[in-house]
Amino acid sequence: MRRPWRPAVAALAVAGLAGCATVKHLDPRDPWEPMNRATFEFNDGVDRVALKPIAEAYQFVLPEPVRIGVRNFFENLRDPWIALNQLLQGKVEEALSDGWRFIANSTFGIGGIFDIATDMRMPKHNEDFGQTLAVWGVDFGPYLVLPLLGPSSVRDGTGTLVASQMYLPWQLPKWLDVDHRVAWQNSLTVVDLIQTRANLLDATDLLEQAALDRYGFLRNAYFQRRRNLIYDGNPPPLPPSDGQSGAAPAEPATGTAVPAASTTAPHDAAALAAGAQRAAGSD
Amino acid sequence: MKRRPAVLIWALAALAVPVASAQELTPDALVKTVTQDVIAVIKEDKAIQAGDRKKTIALVEEKVLPHFNFTRMTALAMGANWRKATPEQQRALVDEFRTLLVRTYSTALTAYRNQVIEVKPLRAKPGDTDVVVRSEVKQSGTEPVTIDYSMEQTPNSWKVYDVTVGGVSLVTTYRDTFANEVRNVGVDGLIKALAEKNRQLEAKRG
Image (tube, rainbow over all chains, first blue to last red; front, side, top):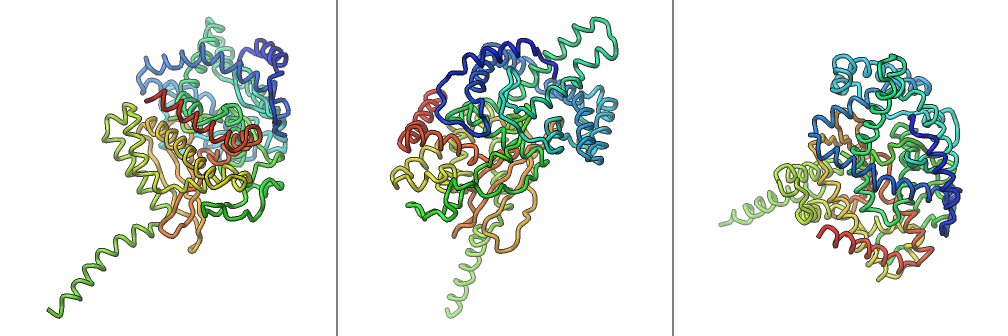
């Protein structure tokens, strides 16, 4: 998505300088943890003072049917890119479904405001270029918290960069050469940012409540979520962990058997999309 | 008079049948029943819809809690460290973790807005004692969210020992945090951190 990259780079630089925070243990999947934690804090600050309050106001002011219409509108604009990614991953049937989905919703669904395609058995799919790269065999790469965009990785961040060229709320005004093009581009992008954040409010509240350490919690959830998405919801079972816990643990004092805890091995930690929290229970 | 024992036996048998079948509910049927029960209560109860925490927690404790094996959940989240904890520490861990999970689950429930929840038919061999029941929360406009329940057979009934939302396992997600805490501040430190978290949530929401 086309987001302010230049401030983002500046923020990265600042994050790098501030990255001397105390970290006692490094996750092999997260070699840049100090920098990532700093970016996380930065994102959190921006969210606290600006993005979240605005999203809450948005949710408070607009009735639910309107918000659903807005969400549908922006989700519809993501479907062509999703269809293209299906094709790039060799999933022709899904690609066709997503293509028809876009056409049906854009026309009968009045510019995507109504999602009629779901009822016509063309459900929404979750694909992005990071997943496509994964299918092509590109490794997860180091975990990377992106300024403003949140959890990602080197591979998935690359995917996001490529995808920004296909971000329709930005590209459509350009291609259609409308009047006040820049105003359209900016307004659409900002509204999308706010409504996306509003859709995640329940999930982030839950995260705040559930986590002892939100950074670590989100990172772990992100690895799992990406792996699940790459395998379209049916990931193969993880290989046994590397000596992290005994294969046949002794009976614990309470009398409950504990099977060997399989830990996500570094090599199949999978990864991208800003959808990590989305699935974590938002409405 | 001679017939009375027979009648009695029949009466007892009639009573026993529903009890037995409730215990032998298949895991997917159990998930379905509990889900429907909970949703029915939420739909009726205006206080819960408005975010009444106490009532929601009471609902979770009554309807959902009995079907979870928190000891196993805690043991899995602890990984290898579980065996290093004393029985007292284990009890304290299970207690605090249960409190935290019940609160979190209650919060998730208040976010429920008429989504359709579909429990998939179980794909398991007869005699399996460890299964995954898959379900989907459907809503128009976005992709369905999958909720998978990892369940084990216990002498009395099936019990949930992990919940996986959109591919993210609750137990796995806590494992890193727990391991880090134990490494940095020990098992007692982890218990203290969990207790502190629960206290904060209590103070914040009342």
